Length: 605
Image 1 (cartoon, rainbow, N blue to C red):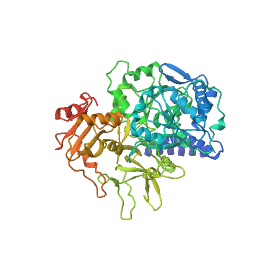
Image 2 (image 1 turned 90 degrees about the horizontal axis):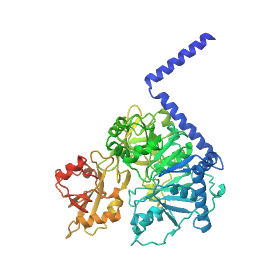
Image 3 (image 1 turned 135 degrees about the vertical axis):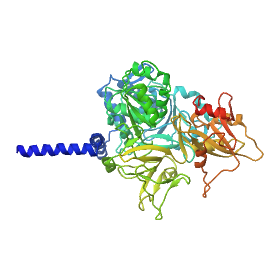
Image 4 (image 1 turned 120 degrees about the vertical axis):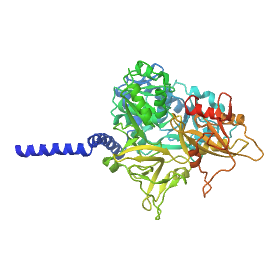
């Protein structure tokens, strides 16, 4: 028996050594995937039950379990779980008493970051309503479109946004929205749980807007299943109830609301909510409130690295950052400046059916794949023709896989385990994100629109966005929406919008090639005022290129590839190029000295 035991121990040690030697990430992957499986099993149990547990249910549970624990700290004021529970009940009672919202209704929410964003959100959900988060930067036609496409009849406007009503002046409305001024005179008694109960995790609960690649923003349908999955992000990375989470990203985006607030609730932690990110206040806040986890986008970390150096910048309790879009050079500088903070990348779109998590912290990777992951999620990288802006198809009409280390378009298979819920409104919007007959007849994949690389070790890195969307200042910009806004200007005949890279900046800056109408001339002041009135700051083109003809494909689709490649260097472009000058309130000719100032970082963008 002893001999057999010794042999078994020897074999086990040998197996452990061999696995570690030939598969260095095996044990780390196994531990991480086991955490995901534990969470996934819980979701499967929910699916089988007649009464599922949503993120709101989890909040109500936490409010009963830890009522006096701070849930939100905002501008130095602490709001406990019980405070938010009672205030959300008051909101629900006010809407119920006035008949402004009933079970099954959709209510639009236009609010900046503040505790009442969460209280109104939860209060409406307690009535069985769906809530549409409106981007506070949108205006005019986009604002009315977002309100209408999700079927909302009631609009809740935050105190800080009340002055923005003029943004819809001059626009026709088929049915004016019902606007309710919420006072906190309602009862704080709980709303019966039956009012919010759902029988399926696939029931819609939110609408979060993404850039409209085919025009105006699209309302991504967010189900309870997606919300519950996102809420597990902090927990999967090792977050716990003693953590203090710093959230300065806008709550109308899925990162802050679903991962940030939902994740805080899931682990029973505390979040420090900022109205707006401030690089100069960031580390002071972290020290003041003993922050241990912060949410980021790549641009946020770059801003922090660009701050003047301080003696105490490594004196903090921050141990982890969770976010996306962090470039390797910023990642390295962040560690050098601020210490050994674990930076955890999460890849996934608001409406997408696929998520990658870089649990090993490999610098520059957005996610990690392995044998275990591929058993659960079906994704593929396929060859993509940038010039013709479409996946490469072989003689049989099917897509082709790329090799390890080769850039390809990321596709995610749609099935029961990874459903795609699409967008509210026209079915065409949903269909445009689908790729059919990819490898066999009848298969359907979600087109992420992202070009990625998977190396031989299974680490996945982001390379570029394709088509009609680019990212700037932490926001997605829909090129078609911008082009449609520009073509309202009386001297512009056609506009082709795209993004160009600027050294030292995350994402791509907006640029447009335009054709001037016959017998008209370019008016920099008029164009400046137009983009100021009709487009949010991040979507305003920084550069304008005047062209005589617009290059198109055989199917008359505008070509962007060569325009993107040529950039905005006036010495390399024979046509006139203009720059958005906020000081002069005009688009001004881009000179070589101005170009050098921009690429050197001296010119503020």
